Length: 344
Image 1: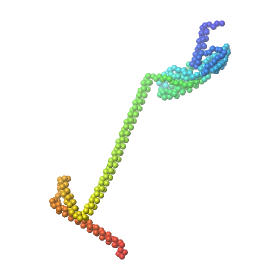
Image 2: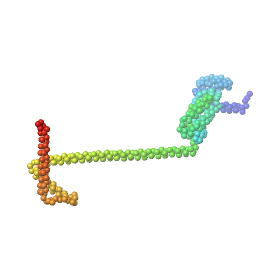
Image 3: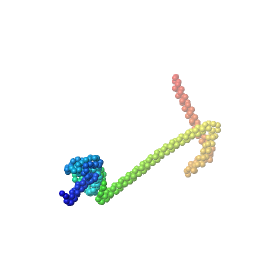
Image 4: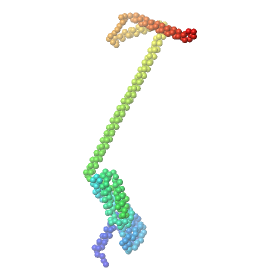
């Protein structure tokens, strides 16, 4: 009995369609039904007997009965990267995004992947798209940029919960491209520029403040150093003047002592008279230099009389000092006699 050509074409089309449903997880076309089969590594061949699941062939050498057994599905156990098409998603703040990504999956149960889902690739991609749209709707636009890794993890967890009955595990999901509306891009650009201008203004103001603080600190330090220098200068001047006065007093005392000693020597009074006459002449020479008003004695030309008068004053002062010295000596002597005389 021959099968019509149209029926054979439909049968071939159904077989190709069934094979293409799981093409993403199949390594190659179905093998021929022979007695001896060699299964490659990281592949799982699903065998049916009389149209019912029989077993899964392991990698290596396997034997089947060609008439009753048939390799129905060839599943790849390798990790597969699938491109998720771009789709529109709306964030919680009503911003429409265009997102696409890459999904990394792996078959962990060939039986479930073969019999529990029709067209596993299509199902897993649609699941990734709907899950991504759902997760994007829970967060705002700024959160999408900041927590992109967290978003990927949440999408993977949601896909794994849904794809576990299919025998497929989602390993990773990565958002590849993100498209924003033109107005949103312009607004974000303006926001970035405003933020940068704000930071620039803050940095500039902080720089001016630091400069003013440094200038004020410098002026303060300069005033302190100037005051300390002035204080030190005044102290040094005072010490110098005090030392000069002390030295002048000591020199004058030595001079007076030497003059007194010289007066007591022979012709000492003549030297004193000569000195007085010299000073008298010098004083008269300076009278009209410092002031216009001058007070002159009646006998300005009698230098000898002036010298004699000065010598008389000096002798009277000397006699007065001698009398005081003798009186003090006698008083001290009488006091000693009273103190040490028992009879008195």
